[in-house]
Length: 333
Image (cartoon, rainbow, N blue to C red; front, side, top):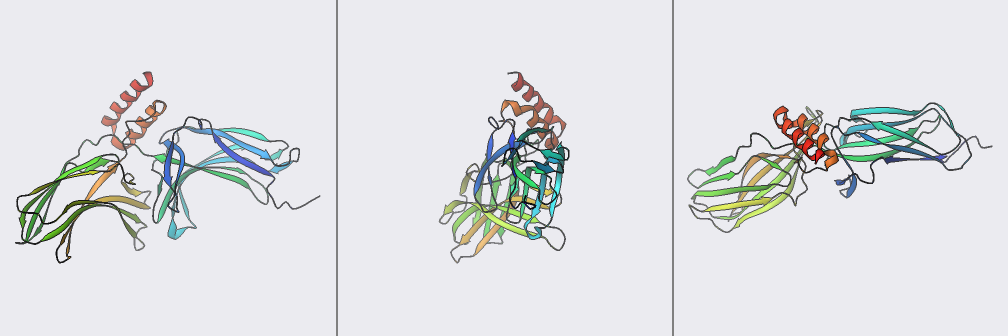
């Protein structure tokens, strides 16, 4: 008889109840690749089965209990030893004992709060996952299954346009205007640039979308700037009185909603950066923050009500009442 087992005597698998029908979403992994994961929203129930399969049928598997956890956590890459959990739910599936044959255990986490969007960045990762564990004296047997969470919003009630000026005394005076300050992820940025005074020779002009990821607090704050998009406005010298239209489609870029002070650990903000380059290669900048949000009105019918609940958390009662009414219509239709 062998007293030490160097291999795991059982395998665990986690299967969602609605795996056949649930939508999947692409999400970036740490190595920059994109994988597809099951997509959930705030307030949705997460349920399924844990299959424990014995590798040698008939052989006993002693355990100290079987459990499943639903975890939401933030990991800062410069502090990899510490995982900051903001959601931690546990369901016990079996008391300590033994398994003599393969078994399946049902689980359900009802109306789980998932307050933040899944995110993988330069210095931080926010992830949600299910972890099933067979607890043993020497080595636990466990299996993790990642899911992706999207946070939904409704149209902002206040969405004023952005008007700004760029000026160098007696040399350059430009006004630019964007149609609004808050954009959903599939939106179009529409704007105009007016040249009121041009006494320097501008040879190139572009708008960049910059993502700024901020992690940490106090003295150990890290900023990572990433240029997501470059949009050439003009190539050549403008003249006084000229106006140039801007149409920048966001749908083609890898964007997330704006995230402000997530669990006091990190922020993700977006900026429109107007760049002018003159013939002597001098660069002039003007930066303006914009807010990005995920539109929540095109959702599968089965999710409509829960999506409305999610939007309620973000937008307050007035907007959410109409969202709930719309959800009810979709459910009945």
